[in-house]
Picture (spheres, rainbow, N blue to C red):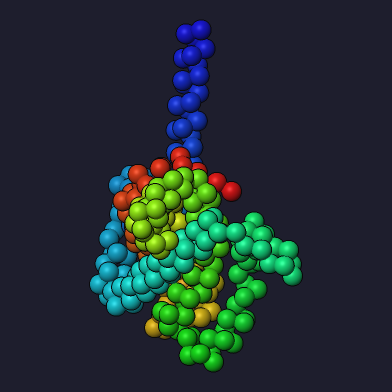
Length: 286
């Protein structure tokens, strides 16, 4: 029994270490490449700094000093656009999810009820984003939203809201209505009960939605590439633009990619306890 237990423990350790290696090795390779000289990055695999190759900080100096204006500009654009679309997705998604959870709807013409409406909303994410890009470009040209923060915030909010509504509706369904009913008996309005009681209890679900929306907006490439050209370019197309006439400059791409993942990691670490509570409470269940 003890031998079986010891083997099981060793197997678990082996799986965890192997899986950690699979997950973390790309980050290690990215970090080391950002410190490699071009010849070390392109000729033969170099794995260990100071053993296989001599590290250099010239690529970091280049993107953080000589090209700081463009690097900081794309970083600032990503931060503004991801934060704006996340705020709107959480705000609108939570209100729509609450409405679908607490009120009964029936559309006579299509015989749609709450579940049908919720499925129609999430079905908007079934289509590939490329389907919407041409209508977006035509509309944005007429509205003057090309290469603006507002244009990308609107586009990303449209893609984030279905997830937000679906997740928050599920989360609100799991909350007891007794506290809301007690507050309404004491004279609170529906809006006041939602703002003072339901939203604080829904913090794990709201944080889960915020993290998913932020990560999607932060990593999105296609819409930023097609709807911006100079002023509102975000980090993903800016990183891809390091593929120049001199070839793919992996050392600059690696340094910028390392810079791009820092806010997401900090965001996730700051809200880690809410993520765990959200998962336990079922905020991310289908």
